[in-house]
Length: 249
Ligand SMILES: [Fe+2]
Image 1 (cartoon, rainbow, N blue to C red):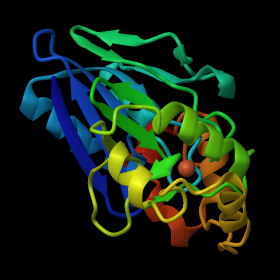
Image 2 (cartoon, protein in one colour; image 1 turned 180 degrees about the horizontal axis):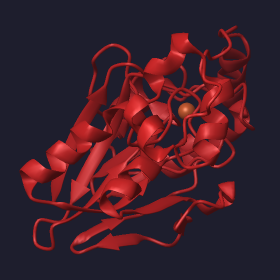
Image 3 (cartoon, rainbow, N blue to C red; image 1 turned 180 degrees about the vertical axis):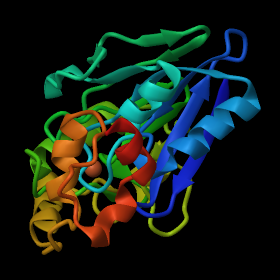
């Protein structure tokens, strides 16, 4: 298996490239709109064909590059079925693994950050999206988020994995790239050391986070599988992609 972790600095997002060496089929998990050309370069350098793009959830802090990459490569758009997006080619749900050549990806349903969030398990690695971050977790105060639900998802679907399972999050804001289930169970300040449910709910309820600056544009853009809304203001155009705006127009 080929595995690459790619960083996009505007939204501090990790995109994951996973591919089967034998068949040359590749998947991109959580591709980000301004970085689609980088993704194509990496695919080309590795001699891979993009079969599918796959998102962990409807993002609020960036727009997926799913549609742009489909336009460029013919890749299929996969996304959690529960979000019921009409632009999706391959709805994904727990219990129905995706297979690409020799690569198998299992999609455990992990709601709580959003109500449609899934993590993706690749043998001894798990892509945790925004459910579980390194020493943290995704916020739970919008998009159907719920702290108690997130606690249950993390405990039932992620902390139940073997301790040596490597944790690859969708974001990190301090340059950390990988953790493990054992490390998060032990030292995650919100969840580790057997933190009880009520303590977690209290932490999440007391965070007083600012309103996400891109959410009003990211949500409709991502419900359309990666279209930057026309009315996106100038000061946040960096989240979009002028080439795609003009070429798709
Ligand atoms: Fe998110």
